[in-house]
Image (cartoon, rainbow, N blue to C red; front, side):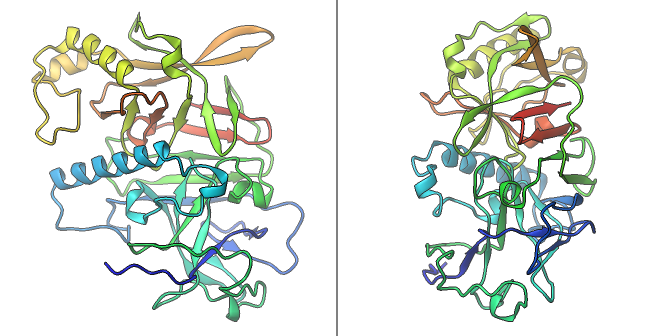
Amino acid sequence: MTSVTAAFTILLLILLQFSSAPASFLSSPEPRNTPTEFSARLINRNSVNSPFYNPKLAHYDRVKAAVNISIARQKYFQSKRFRLNDMMNPPVKSSDYEYITTKFSIGSPPVETFAVVDTASSLSWLQCRRPKPVFDPAKSQSRKVPCKGVTIQIFKMNYPGVGVFGLNRGQLSIISQAGYGGFSYCLAPKDKPPEAESSLHFHVNNNITGNSTPMLIKPNWDLLNMVSISLGDTRLVIPPENFKDGLVIDSSVPFTMLEHYALATLQFEIGRWLGGQVSDPMHKFNLCYLTTDYQIARLPDLTFHCTVVVTSAMLQLFFKTIFDPAFLHSTRGQSREVIGAVHSSGKNTQNDNAKGIMLHR
């Protein structure tokens, strides 16, 4: 595909006014000091409601695409360009995300479009120059930003993209710019069809209830301090330094990615329950077994332990999942764990940006 090098992307470095209507984002020439809470529906890329839906894909093709998405995100996390000064040229292809939002509106009069949700990034952008512009600021009464303005970044894209909403605690994110206290999202259980409803909610005052865990203070990352992994009552013997880079809860990636040694240890422990390990025909998955439904049903919960500090006592926040062989290994030397959408499905994830804490239940 031909590269496009013209300035055609608006970085959302403006204070947006959000309406309370579901999945509707409205800009205003005089934004209120307090943003409005609202909810939006998230669409799985394999849903018939998704603009990326391809009815010709078989189940194997969809799994393969999910693998490629996960690998692309892993490379994104590893990239040295993931620094504040280099964030304007990340791999943000719309098809490299597991979920997108429903349509939203921008400008006055409002123009409908959509963007993907990235909970692990602060970058937010919309196109302003292409054959069919999503948003033309010259026609907006509330925001007239020329494509050659100071808030426009020129970079090269080799793929069709529409836009991205970055939701972490970085200064460029929608959450930070609009002054929201945080957000929460709930992904449909993985045993439901792709059309099952998933939702995203923006909070003004994020009142998190239940056990929560503090997010690590690192620029442009929403990280948790994972301390160990257990399978049932067995705590895996993994050196703490293997988790030193933190844990990312990422709705944008389908599969969970573990540090190489951690995954090898988990692989050995699961083998004690199942045996019969076989090779993956795609050569991507480590946890593939020749087993029975009965043996799968006997598998205990897999738990990711993160620290919680309450009145100087060390408790544990548990990320539990019924075993699913949806793991990809990370490259040797990388110690950042990523919990993907498969293992976050059926759970409510709440981020309190003001307090820097997260609840996953």
